[in-house]
Amino acid sequence: MTTNAAIGFGTTLSVDGNNVAELTTVSAPAMNVKMVDVTNHSTSTSAWAEFVAGIKNGGSISLEGNFYPGDSTGQVALSTAFGSSTVNAYVVTLPTAFATSISFSGLVEKYEVVPNLDKQVQFKIDLQVTGAVTMSITQSVNATTIALGSGTLYPGWAAATYNYGANVTASTTTITVTDSTAASIKLYVDGTYTATLSSGVASSAISFASPSYHVLRVECKDTNKVATVYTINAGRT
Image: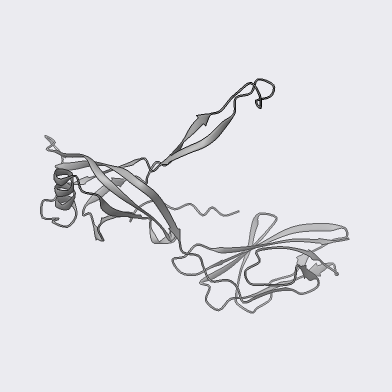
C-alpha cells in the first residue's frame, strides 16, 4: 500500500488566533494520564497489579524559531503572557494534507532569547497546557454510492457505513464509486494500490477465481481533507 506519510513543513502555532512568526520547531501537547494503582488482596488475581485511569494531563509543548521582535501578536504576545501569567488559547495546525488541528489553553512556562555567536538569534518557549486538549480532523465527504458489477453488499449500501461484506457471483467483478466531490478515489486490493478511479466509472475487472477472497479498500479524498475509507470483504465460493 502506498504510504500516506508527509513531512511537517508548514505546521503553525497560533496564540489567540494569531500565528507565531518564524517557527522552526513546534511540538503538539504530550498528553498523558496518571495511572492509579488499585491492587488489593480481594480482587487482584494471580498477583497481577491492577490500575484505573486517573487525572488526564495535557502535558506541555516546546517551540523554537528565529527571534523577530516585530512579531507583536506572536512572539511578543507570548513574552507578555509570560510576564502576566495569563492563560491564552493556542492552536497547532498541521500541514493541509493532514487536515488536523490541536486546540488547547496554556501558560507560558519558559521564554528564552538565544543570541548565538555565529548563527541567527533564536527564541525558545515552553507552554504548559491547562485543561482539555481537542483534536479536530476534517473528514472528506462520504461517497454517494459504491456498487459491485456482480455481487451484493452486506449490509446494503449506506454512505455512513464504512465496512461491508459481499458475495461475488462471477469469476470477475468491477467496482464503481460515485463521489463527485472527491479529488481522488483510490482502489486497493488486498492492501496493494490498484487504480485511481473516476467518479461513476467502473474499475477494471477484479479476478475472483473460485473459491477466492479479496479485501477491497476504497479511499475517497477531498482536497485538504482526511480520506473517507470504505472496506469490502468480498468472496466467491
